[in-house]
Image 1 (cartoon, one colour):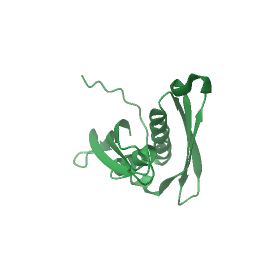
Image 2 (cartoon, helix red, strand yellow):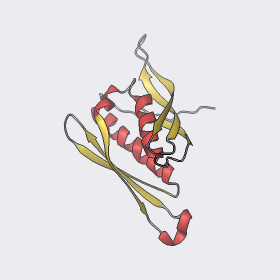
Image 3 (cartoon, helix red, strand yellow):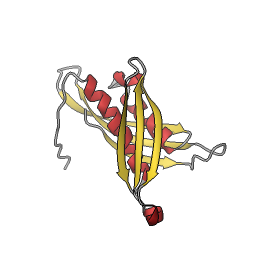
Image 4 (cartoon, helix red, strand yellow):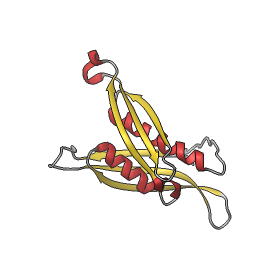
Length: 149
């Protein structure tokens, strides 16, 4: 399944004052129930969370669960952010590490992403973590180059 995500945020996630809201659009490849061919399905999902990463995770899960029920037993265990070049101040690259766990098997894995935007790095690490378990549970995998012009 291909996962393409567009994300937008509202709120500052400050404890006790507001929540963060993530709005995402996910395009997944699914089997058409009528003829078993593959087709694209776009899903729009909105979710609130205690911060932008929590909101993103919940919105991704909400969008993907209908077509990938194997994600139901996946949870985030840990989230770490490191500044790689403190001298660059707000322009510094950030490294995000997210640890996931499959509840049923207790199996854990970690994904890493680096970007100057901590939200982008977090989103990439989240998507990589979900893709990892989807590939592991898939009957088959493929890579598609899609021209949308």
